Amino acid sequence: MTTKAEFNAEEWSRVVEGPPLAGMIVITAQRGGTLRESISLGKAYAEARQQHGQSELLDGIVSEQPQVDPQRYPNPEELRQNGLAAIREAIELLEQKATPDEVDDYKRFVVNLAERAAHAHKEGGFLGIGGQEVSDAEQAALDEINAAVDSPGQEHASAG
Image (cartoon, rainbow, N blue to C red):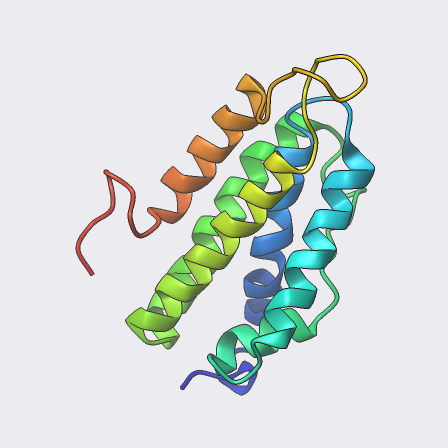
């Protein structure tokens, strides 16, 4: 099993930053709902911490406080472009150092966080009635994140 000790500080920082970046890409894709979406990311981390022991790598990742430096990405477009690149880099690092199962677990965690953020706030509607579960902008962000991770279970995923 892969642990934090197998990464230098910069590599580990990149790996840990991937999941919250995915959530932030979705959160900033559409205006509104930021508080609910951010809370849903925190809940996803808390739930992952409760599954402690299933993956040492994920245990190490979720034991860190999820955070993204807001000064690093001055606008949503830079966050999207640089965030997707950072997620791909994290996966490349993991492919070099972790087992295929751990890489798949990481990819699923990244996509799960993004999906949780997208579903945390309905777009449109009135007083909670009607509206869209996931906005077009959020769906586009989810599609880009899925493509970036080449997530298991997606049409474009490679066998692995």
